[in-house]
Image 1 (tube, rainbow, N blue to C red):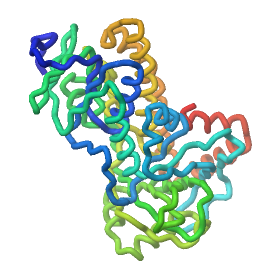
Image 2 (tube, rainbow, N blue to C red):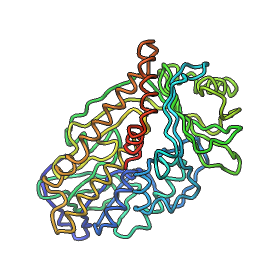
Image 3 (tube, one colour):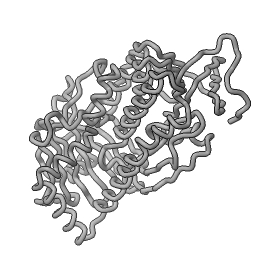
Length: 410
């Protein structure tokens, strides 16, 4: 990255308050919220973003916490979902071993623990459609996709030149590019990575009995096994998403098993037969698991959001939801400054954003790391301690409800 100019004098240069690089769920939602706050927003992504894309069911879904759902509603995304979501009304946390019944000591978050659903499950394809539609429908946003950005940042401003030949002058650049953020690397922001040598297997299953809005987090020696309720489709009246953790070699081997053998492995990890017979549907996906965190979230005229700033183990389903919390905090900071006529890219503004987000995100990263290490083993003493701990929290109603509200992002 060079730093030789503060703004472009090109006659047709585009003026923006903020330029967001990366049009994933976090980047798009942030663009919509900033534009709703009266800011001029440019967003750039390498991929094409067709507003009416509707790919086939592929087994992937997102768990959206209650606070994140509120954000998506405010951003105009939720109302554009092309298919129903499924409320998560109950969450049962159990401990066990494959092929054996779960421990009789468990933790359950029920309908009496919250005055609204804990969250909702939405298909990945549905969220992508809604995001693209909201992006093009929100006034104040200019979309450049497919396109790529070359960014020059100085203390006075930023100039963004795209592969297509456009020039954008902005007060602030926001990196929403994911874990391998080029903008973060160009800014030489150090990143600490925590490898787990594990992979997550992601798929969907049709099942015999209705899930009644219940999610399951079943801790096994190799890692957590999660069943997450999904809305019915015309083909599958009872449907759930599955995410479970295995060592790298085991995960790839299991994902390639024949249908019947793969079904057998799922049933061994369910813990009990409460859903009846299960049948895998859609594709199977394998993702390497790790955690990472940027040593800082800001640089000159630059802010990191979402996975560019942090990545956590999926043990608590908080990865994307942490990114949405970044959006909430950054929106409040930037819209407030813009409304007062201030400079949204000023150092003190960016420090304010970092102070509001990084400590809480680091606590969540530490918590998920401890949970993975505590529950991802078969030590008898630790098994007893964690089972007793789950049962104790289950009996202390105020503590249980406090945990629930935090996970909901409220």
